[in-house]
Length: 452
Image 1 (cartoon, one colour):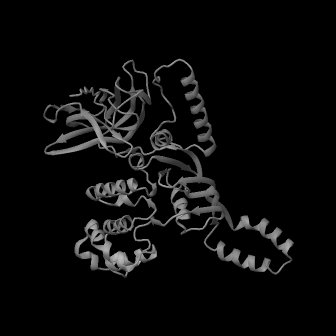
Image 2: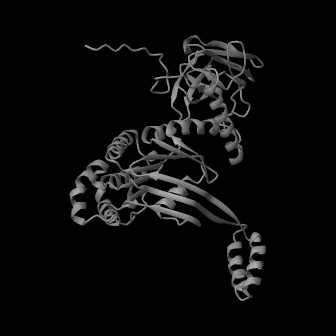
Image 3: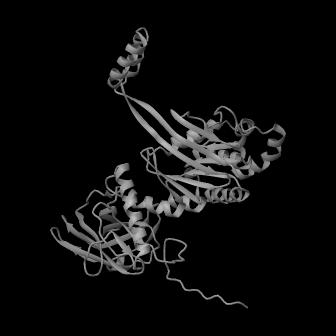
């Protein structure tokens, strides 16, 4: 089968102007230079252009091959170049250099409402978009009842698109591009706008299209979505392609870097990936042993948020083993503890403490309170400090997780946070060899299969 998409040495460069008037100043300078002899003008232009703008490479010398009928996810932090790459593939943005080859009828859901006219009704926009994709009016009439039913926007189908909410636009746009069944489908984070019920419908529809053999390309910040919908994944960072491979492997490697307090350069990430591959190969060739627990000083949550203290504050939050060794990388099914200090700067009544474990996507997996609300610490005085300890079994699948910690009090009928820290600690659970866990929580399940 031929490749559906091929990118060779693709670069997209934008000019970042030094100040608001630099663009018009440069245009005037360029006009003056054009009156000079060619060699003199080009030399002068090259010397002076740095005073007006600097080059920003949104995509840099990127090579990518997408096979026909395959599904690919693209991950990376904001500003990595993911959306620009999709726009180049879709043909809405031309590359500065390099070649792009696309074979097949392509439909793209890049921005909500892109390809639609806000003054037209939803019905009119369905026919408009279908004609852009090359469908006849007769075929669109045949498909319209299914598109309308799937979108579930009711009477708004005959209202102008400018009156739609973002969720309604997404419903209509997804319905159109999925029922027109293109050979290549590209989606850029648009599904994040929909409600949970409609998202499940979208995933089911995408699964149907994938089984029919479309070529699928998805940009998403959700590693879970990438793994669920795509067989392959590509990690983009700083406009460069860092890693390609099976979606679960690439997203796991990506998660090792996303939660750091400072983002390393492309060169440092490449070096760490190379070193990790060498170590992995050495382990595979040498004696087999479990991953060891360890602490990494740069594995810190970039997303940490500390609430404003209301008469007390939390500090020294740590994840450790039972011998008090601080850790950021742990082994599944072992026992660990969360500890933190709470110092009170005013007195409170009915005080209790809590911790919570979450996924990278924010899904709350579990946690605990130190006391039942009716049996909380009756009174704490200003100046007192408490050491809080929670022990738990790390029955978690291989992934990266966050810890929230908090201290609450009840005064009268009001329950309030004295202090709280969101994403106080991030930690990673090592993979279990031959694990059969299908989600984040590991119930340590056993199974028995008998043939009757």
